[in-house]
Image (tube, rainbow, N blue to C red):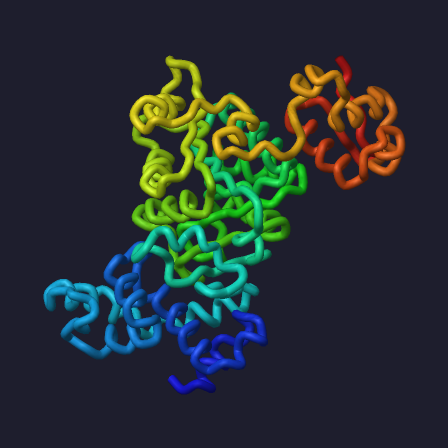
Length: 393
């Protein structure tokens, strides 16, 4: 492929300013093609790209039957890898065109939006990332916390996920999860309810919602944060890709918290990746009679996980204490916090809009909206088309 063909292929996938350098375009396109050729976490693909660069690695992978000396691989291992890659060598055009049609952005190492945390995966790091929404959310400053758990979540798990995600999001923490039903969805929705930033990591292409019932949720996530995947558009989620997706959730985050999980839950796979990366790991305890919490208790016992009962426990786990504090702590200080002021500004009978609540409470309108969203999750306030009111006793 010529330099001009590479530039044309990338137009619409990357900012126009990134198309001026022919060498950069070749590397970007090569990484996009590698995301098509190799399955997530392919260590030989990662090693080849790491040692040779993406463009040179692509040429030898599609042409040579003997491994380059720099790789120190056996001929057998190299040929087996090439046999995995070469059947897909012409599939990239479809993936790229599909990405352009739905407004997906291609992110590669060196971009400002590239999340450098994932580089700690070494040769198992993704070759590229495909992103819907704000790609800058991937490399945003501040803490990022993975909240994951069972698909078959209990009401207890959903409530805890919502409370922890909402409180962390209000404090400026980015919430990372996998957009699955159950705990993942509860964490994303709670974050969105308080206008927080959240990242959904998918096992398939970002052009199609999985599960299909989460199309609206993923659209909302893309408006407030990012929906991302290391596999290109048009790729179906598989069991292997879900397991490999979990390593990205762990790598993107400063800490992973498992809220509910069965004894053999996939969330334990995410926890294992977090532990292997040396990231903080916590779990929410549940009833000892609940199968939905057996995996959490296993993390506390076998993975040396921290016991998490609130958002404050998560902040303490990562040594980060910024953001709004819980009402009980503020009361202990002898002063009223913003949450109490917002609550005091509400009536149990007369709905009030955000501007009126801000005037009465002395809290900025943007912060009022965040607190109202958080208090909606725990049932303290309700809203309708007329405004917000306090839930009656």
